[in-house]
Length: 342
Image (tube, rainbow, N blue to C red; front, top):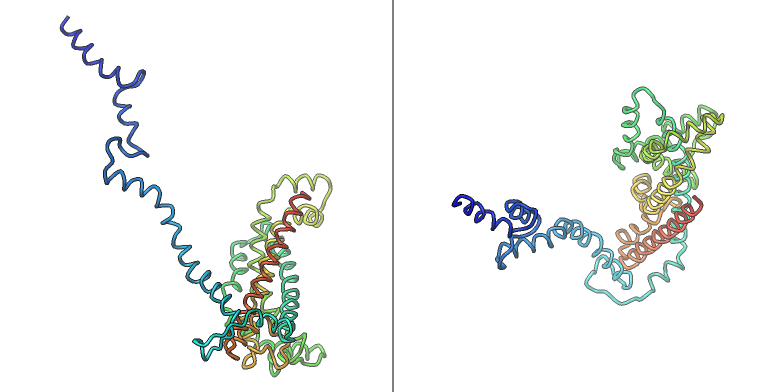
């Protein structure tokens, strides 16, 4: 009798803990993910603060650097664009309102640089993306040393802009350049690539094409490898050859990727600066003796750091920013149209 009473007395607290559960499990269930119950203490407050603040602390470095090096300069440039500011006298600023923008709209140099930027963008982007799709299509098949070819495709992208442009300057040299030597070999008169109107635009475009074709080819290759193999098998059963599969299967599946590369290449062409600057040499900031390859980036640099008119240079920068916003809106509309068509 005594032993049975002791057993009942020991089992009573465990029955009060929770029906159907062991007391050890009830005590262990509270440990992970929640602070221990009881009166508030510095440890529980620290725990709650850590759970709420840790995510913001992890992402804060991005916003700090973005605010310091992107947002603040952007807002400061907008403020400068509404003032007459000279590089030699930054302390004396006079309110100009929209005069800098009005001067841009009435400036032949601004419209010339906008036209040059558009032309170089088209000349460099269209052949670049066409060749990138073709190269990606070749690399998509099982080739020997495919990894080596992919590394080779990225080599121009990894090359410094200065080094690549200086090599092309030697190739397009008026006296002794390889391009003119080849033209003379086939019976064509040499071309002064720096002083020629279309020749200079073509020369700058070839630098951009050489640097970015491999990069876009790898993007297309990654998209091609994500296309289901069942589509190609169905097309081959219907009698489609490789060219027909490429036209009717690969290209339609690449539409979002093609749109992405077009937008990125257009943004890059709008901001084109290093290639024409180094290609022109002494007159690089002017875009040649007749401004024949002066892009918007060169025009902004010339007005801000050569002429010293920071107010006008800031207005050019914001004009480029508005152009990029317009490109983003067009991209959004086209992408929505593609989704609806699919």
